Image (cartoon, rainbow, N blue to C red; front, side, top):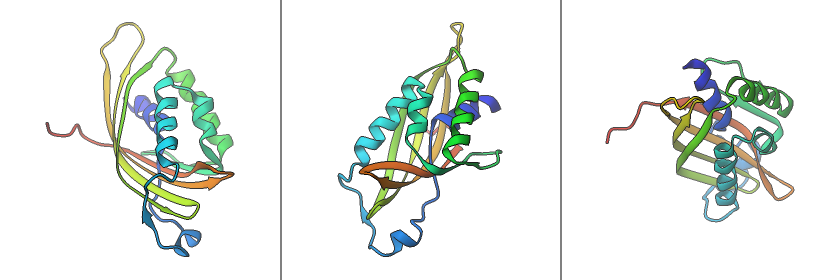
Length: 163
């Protein structure tokens, strides 16, 4: 299950909630349509397709991934290496559900943060039963050349919510 948790954290990209010095100059506002909805749709799509190359393309060159029980993964090159290992370790798996309920998003100029709760359903090869994964995600994004890129992500597992 720990390897599967690594898979989910690798595919579910997230981050710390502070903007840093650049964001402190402008008053943060609740995100409306600053391109975050399009970014989030693309993010969800690459996870559903288990498209590691497209996932890595969402990252800034100096992005950082913080996952449970793991050293920080720093830089797009190391994130790509991590994703290649995920592909190898989880060949034949299929993500059939990727639901992210974004609870809050803040934009300040070319910086944004957002957090939400995640529910994934993943089928292992061989007609085995689905594995359901629940978690929390936070992203810090920076707009570069008109596109949002992940600067930092934090992902953690969570218990199944009460019905």
